[in-house]
Image 1 (cartoon, rainbow, N blue to C red):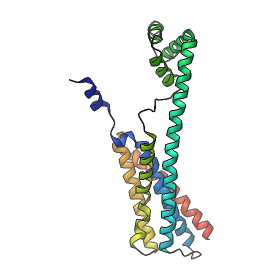
Image 2: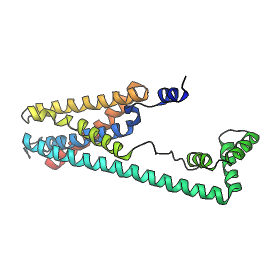
Image 3: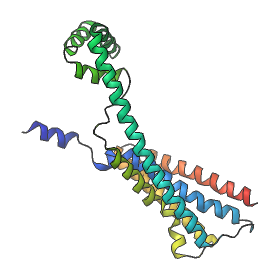
Length: 241
């Protein structure tokens, strides 16, 4: 059996798992940010102080949705680019240190291996062997000394696109009822239900990708969204009242 094919099939991540951070982060922020617009308007209109038409809700909501989605996507892209640059710079520095002070770096690796549970003799043997292979040694030092994982396999542009589309898709849900219904209290109720439905779906997506307990995944996602939604409605009510 081709071991490379086995490694790829057995250990590769699906798209949802690979970009789970971007999907959950973008989706949750999209839902909460857009619902904040709806809830803020609803809170302000609660006492009749500010009557906001459905068109206004959609205009403000969509403008906010796409502006924030672009900002989030570009922010993720720049963040990943910076992470790549930082990793490469730190790894190059580590390679120079290995070349200039090999014994000192070997002792550092020895101590790291000891701290991770290897007996002294085995740690010394492993450090000595790895010191003959500077690139492998540098990779280990990056992980164990600096806590940095090689981001080379993550494309910053793709990561930014996943964040953008997750933000837009999930963030559009709270606005859905206002596309088809007049802006009444009942429409706001439908928006609330749609929002919680989107949060539940996001929690289920997280559960499917991680295999963690379903109640934890869904509960945490819904709780965070509910707190943010309540704050948005409360601010709107205070300002409107």
